[in-house]
Amino acid sequence: MPRLQFGLRLAREYGAPDDFVFSINQFAMSAFLAGGTRGTGLPDLVQRSLECVEVADPQNLNTSMLAQLLLGTAYLLAGNTAAADTTLAAGLARIQAAGTTLEWIIFYNAVHADTCRALGDLERACARARAGIE
Image (cartoon, rainbow, N blue to C red; front, side, top):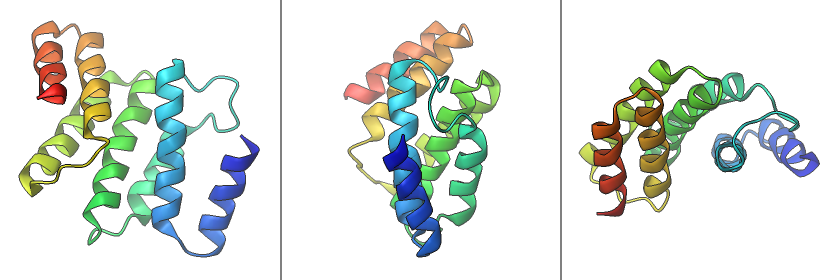
């Protein structure tokens, strides 16, 4: 994780909020796929994700929507499935309303499907998974 820490420090020092959001997002995606943040150099992903939401430029839809989805992923990894569900659903709805087709939307549909599954809502989990591949 030294490279991630270095990237985050540079993004802060040089006032590059997009780079900060994208750096944290890469960590969150990796942590989700690995099954958690334990043993990594950035255990407080929720706090970092909240920082991303704060610094993301609302005029930059890619960055601000990504920050919201990142926060949902962080909530899921922290075990707060209710907050993850709310945040991911709102973020995905926002992307759909904006008519944006971003390459990482498939990944976040999968994260939301996993969140729905964790909440015991298998019907919604299947629907979200289908949305990710359609």
